[in-house]
Length: 234
Image (cartoon, rainbow, N blue to C red):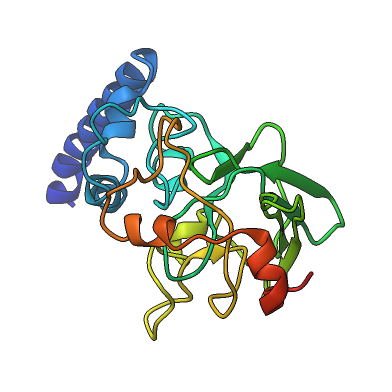
């Protein structure tokens, strides 16, 4: 009995010290708590590497990377519900501008995002907070060729997304393999593509980058594509 009585005040003091420490952190804005919440998440963010020189943080940076590693509510970055990158074809890095990515949640609520010149698209959680699972559709209109003809491709994801808002967490910036489904793309590799890299875009790959120069150089006009058929689901 004596031992129990002597250790109880010690436990109480420890609890009071812990409560006081948590209160101090809360008054300070909780910044120290955020920094220590998830070593795993810190490691994921570190795995993304450094920013590309000359590309400011913003809508054009880090194409093809999992957006919600930073924009998922961990840390100070703006919080997204969804984010990803659309490429022209599964076997190259040519990004697509103007692709329409529509997310439909389990209640029928829809949100359509439009990709920029780096291929990036995203939506803030404040503007759209879906109820999972969700259905995703990508609609792309190819640039017009010398004959003024363009094509529209519609790609519907074959499975539902159950929780992950970072498209690149599964759709890595690489061709499909046994390890994953590969890039989100507009035109099947069996058909020619008229998409090209925008040399004036702040982000995305540049002409001459590995995996990009060949793809951009092999782009053909939509007139050539018409003679070969179309990919995806027009």
